[in-house]
Image 1 (cartoon, rainbow, N blue to C red):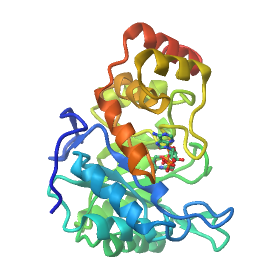
Image 2 (image 1 turned 60 degrees about the horizontal axis):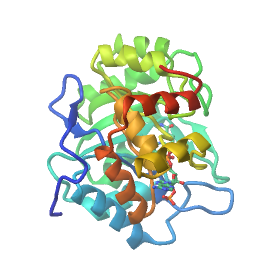
Image 3 (image 1 turned 135 degrees about the vertical axis):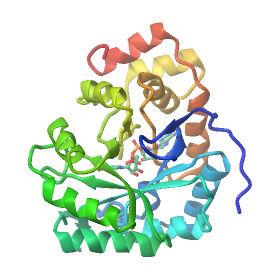
Image 4 (image 1 turned 180 degrees about the vertical axis):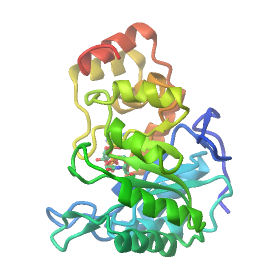
Length: 300
Ligand SMILES: NC(=O)c1ccc[n+]([C@@H]2O[C@H](COP(=O)([O-])OP(=O)(O)OC[C@H]3O[C@@H](n4cnc5c(N)ncnc54)[C@H](OP(=O)(O)O)[C@@H]3O)[C@@H](O)[C@H]2O)c1
């Protein structure tokens, strides 16, 4: 069992209708898979021991919310999580996602049929070494890169059935519109929503407030800008003023943006992980928040 300290701060968020309280500073595991030319998130990482070290350091520092998917690698990331962390700490919440499979060319292919969703849940269970998945996000795929309208009733109904069977404890959504969230909530309770959002990309400002009102977690993916981390003169200048790094300021801004935001920055580096975790202790003064808001086009 990994010895743990609380370097990520003690403030937590309880997923609605659950007994799961997670630290708002989490970790996203996608960067742990490898890369093969243009095929991103593909195959094993160059340094498997390094990937294991990142996961163990995260958990040892108090992170108890890890985001993953069995299509990262594919399978690789979940297998590394199991190797690094199993037997899992009791309070660790692993959130996975379903609705895609990978083509041989590295593409991300929608996989939302009943059979594909059932297979995906069983793949996650097997590769993570679990009897039940804590949270499964249904990722909408009408557009791969951004939320787009379309009914998610059929795949939501399958996930709700898997929840009834006890294979899935709680359900979340990803890459979704407000209409899809409303549709899903008529089928089963939703504990979290994971859409793209960061200092620069702020399409969900209104949605975050609506979810906060209902106690639902909002988990921004690409919190640091994703494969091309955020770059902004204002961000760099603010970071210098605060004696922090730009990535720390970007994370601290998210944590201060709304109490229902849980962050899952991704990194393959222990050094970057340590830097990112320290952001949970960074207080950004309100006048500086106004400067940061100007990066994304104005205050929320
Ligand atoms: N639902 C979805 O559709 C979806 C889509 C994408 C991602 N996700 C989830 O969201 C998580 C976070 O997204 P992400 O990992 O893609 O993007 P991210 O967290 O915005 O950024 C990761 C990138 O930032 C770099 N980085 C991290 N910390 C840094 C630091 N302190 N200084 C400089 N560079 C730093 C990483 O490189 P190094 O490895 O070199 O640190 C990596 O290139 C993922 O891990 C995944 O679990 C979900």
